Length: 74
Image (cartoon, rainbow, N blue to C red):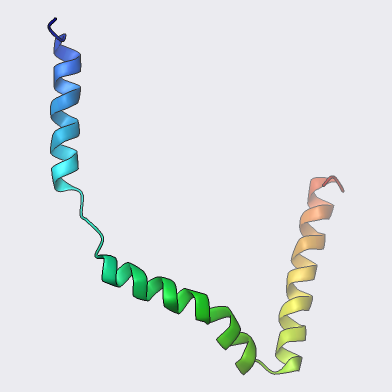
């Protein structure tokens, strides 16, 4: 059974793409994940209670503004 020209072209392009896509370094991925897991806790530990409250107020205001803009629907 032969493939039509479009299927053959598609297969050729897919094989070229697969060969040219950059592969991620597993060691770098692991390091990035480890850092990401620590990030939030480390940031929270360094913030003062006043700064945390300021961030929370800003987030709350953004949520309420979005809710008003949406017409109150959730």
